[in-house]
Length: 193
Ligand code: SF4
Ligand code: SF4
Image 1 (cartoon, rainbow, N blue to C red):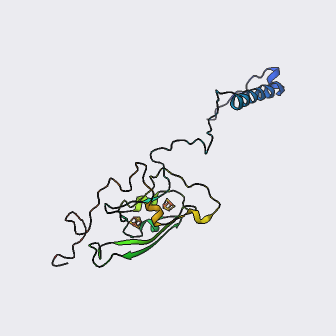
Image 2 (spheres, protein in one colour):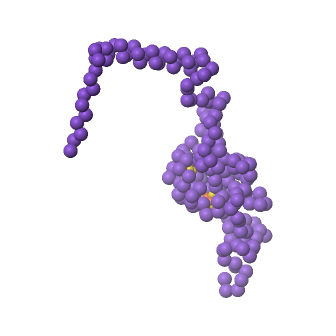
Image 3 (cartoon, protein in one colour):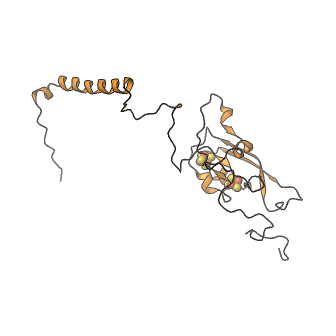
């Protein structure tokens, strides 16, 4: 059943509107002078970029590529992130490790890894899709404005040069290297493989 809202009883001054408009303008003027000239401001905005708010802990900022203990990229160039990316703004070219490298034949590395931060919608799907915890958005940074499109194309070395908010280039999640007995992948040295 419809609820009937009774009309409010207006005084003569309220029904005339003009005094109410003047009262409203008085509030606007009071706030204006307080916020512009007084040290006790009511204003909730900040003087960006001189003043910046602290971003929340789970803020999705500019990406970074995490390192292994030896400083090489954790990324194995599996393309999961670029496949999951709805904006198609990740470009990866995979390469094989050297024949003498224990990772040869097990994992690849990203010879080219570029993210177009201008096309990125900061959904975080790439981070979710990565099986290696190799890509993160925990830098706490947002892209600075620029008039050059190229400034938004972050390559592998730039992404690896960005630390996380804790200042480290690695992640707390364990990493099992090929050849290490804890490595969960197949061992091609074993008979029968
Ligand atoms: S945050 Fe989303 S849009 Fe940006 S690179 Fe990752 S998957 Fe693509
Ligand atoms: S960042 Fe992760 S998901 Fe993307 S290619 Fe590298 S290992 Fe795969």
